[in-house]
Length: 381
Image (cartoon, rainbow, N blue to C red):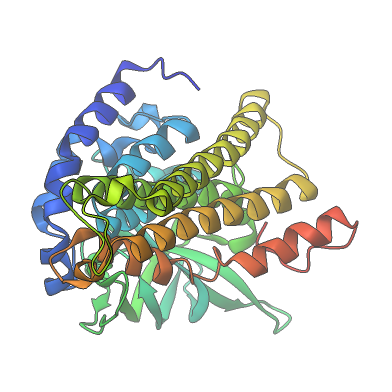
């Protein structure tokens, strides 16, 4: 897919040039359990956080494929920075589904970072007819330490006494962010618990969660899956590049191979990894094209297409993960040293692939049910 917008092309070029800087920051991100502030500043300056903001608010309103291309490059540099950027960018268009007043508030600066929590672990209570009070805690909110806004799911009890899930837009400054993110993978993502204690939310910043899932120009879940897959594939590319960087001058210990690149086994391992990454990208390109075709036509994908987007995205993620697994096993014992980026790509892609919406088997089940003519058994389509 060709990028014709010079603004998006400039963002992609700047981000690509930042890859070495982002990669060098990986160890620092792990140590502080949060990506360096410098990374955020560099990406903001490059225009990354304007990608999904509507043009009428000074954003780039970039097509989904262009957004994915930028996120892919960020994750190629550093997995934690790529993951956090993916969360912020993939969530930044969601406020466009809210009333105009909410959009004006969120998009006022033309660049915005939005973190999300779609498990309805909070509650909304109506007050005075013009707003709600939000209470609750949400775990694992990636990017919460640097976001401008949070989009949080909470239950609101209707007149008939039945609770229903709603989404509330809340400034991060109104929430408490716990220092509780200690993880063996994705350590730099700062995926802390956020808590709302009696936070007042005006009515124009609360909508039914079903409206969010229905989406606008793009359906929310397939859009989010596409952005997520871009980050995972970027991690695999970063691991692949790092493996090749390490190869010159390396032998295979306790064998006669003084140059690992001459070993047929290594040649096979490298080729398999390269082809897994390329296959993942080919799958990605297919669903990105289909999403954009629907957006351009003003239509929405049907249930079968939405289920297929989940299945294909998760399959691409699995291919990316397998590529990194193979490279890690071929890299030799020194790969486990903490200052080696390849081990971080390996741990992060394996850990982050356990995210509930990206897990392989769950998504293949959803896709398989659709193929067989069965109901998808989930509202997250």
